[in-house]
Image 1 (cartoon, rainbow, N blue to C red):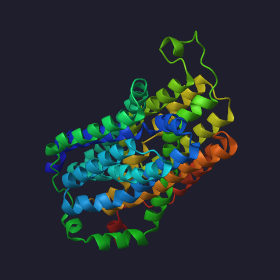
Image 2 (cartoon, rainbow, N blue to C red):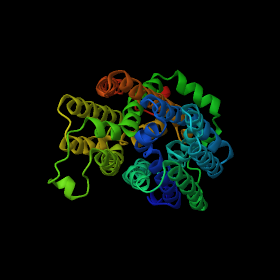
Image 3 (cartoon, rainbow, N blue to C red):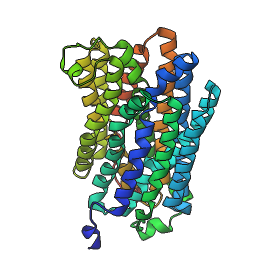
Image 4 (cartoon, helix red, strand yellow):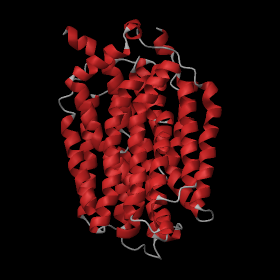
Length: 414
């Protein structure tokens, strides 16, 4: 069969990785701007936190929209629209001098991430992949987001050492637009079945919305967004303020990490580095074992790691250990969740269906980022909001267990 001769590394996959690397490098850096922007304007922590929370919310709102646009007007046109919107949001944000302006312009950044992020890219990569390569292809594209995270926060920290945050935003806007040079490689063959091609979007949405399994997947992805967005937005500041001092004669200091601020930025990079391996492993396992049980295990692992981290004294060593453990579980949920959606509901409208599920992820992201800033201003630290994340993570571990991991059409016939 021709399906078995489809290579793993295709031009579509390579182009998708390029777009996601840059998009996620910039997205992962926003936590580094928390303190500089708040200090320049003397704002409460909640103000810029709300801007990042709005960014995450509109990323979620935009995901099914861009997924549907990609299926209607083409993947490349949708990505171009997303990149231009992303860049516009960054440029306008660089001129913002009030919390309200930042919060308004982050809606554009959020839509831009939706157009250059997982929803559109994973859908086109999924359609361009053979059945046996799909889980691994999705994992590689997801790992590309982690690769961006590896250098995104440290790059922002380094740039801030010699230029203003406004100029960093402008530089990032240029970087987003350069990804469009990779789009000529993104020509996806239609590998959906004849039945999937003939089925309307309204029909498959109706079937999915009536299916309890789709609801469970939707609910389960909420905690992923809460945990990841909270850590991306607040962990650098949390480490800066709550971590014990770095030993000036120790290994970290000898490597140039002499302040907790630098450790906070490095922790985000370390999470991304560990996640490359974790995500690729999840993709490999997803081809061989039940995706729902793998997801439940990932959420359980995150829950235990987060509970131990906050219950014990926060030290440079515990920060490094937590970053590696959480990193290994970080985006491992994405190829499994997107692969589960494709497996159960088909490839034709994967972008839209995954986009709707991803909206739950971003609702959690909004809550995690906003609540992080709000409870910080109330209590002076991040302990309370961290424990909320522990509870939500345990909920997601449980809610995946009843998922029926069988294609919808086969289930109806059985």
